[in-house]
Amino acid sequence: MLSKLRGKVDQYLQDIAKIFIRIGLSANEITFLGFLLAILAPVYA
Image (tube, rainbow, N blue to C red):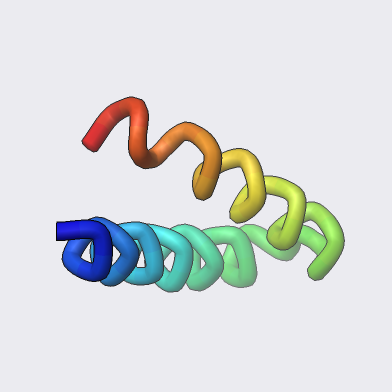
């Protein structure tokens, strides 16, 4: 179950990173937002 959730989070991170790269955010901002998402994802999963 945990590995499944991890895969889901990884997919979210990849999708969000693609969107942010298109928008033009810096790598640091993407990393920070990814970190936030990693904390929040288990809450919303």
